[in-house]
Length: 130
Image (cartoon, rainbow, N blue to C red):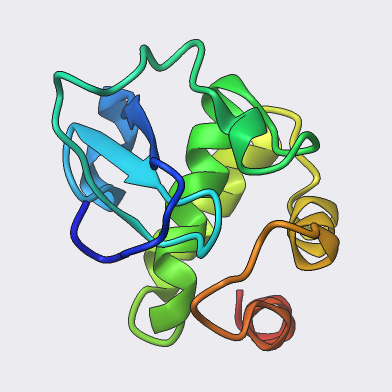
């Protein structure tokens, strides 16, 4: 993942085929510190049913819902352009039982998370646009 130069290793995961259209590739990764999301090397990606999202924050959703939230975080910096993808990812996360607004609010408060974008502002914008 080339979008970040943070110290912690990114959490790499396999993207379920139903989300390929809104993902950076068949494997993706999220930085536990800055929340940058990008394509990942398939060799380091964890299976889609057990990504180590607790490395981002202990309250981060796991499994399929966590994958949808991670991919959504990758789209938030370009909210206006990525609105359809964000809507799709939010719907997938919610169908998996994730409270997306609560999850994002918890990330804002997480002590080790320092987003590379204005997460609080993007949350407000997402609520208004999506």
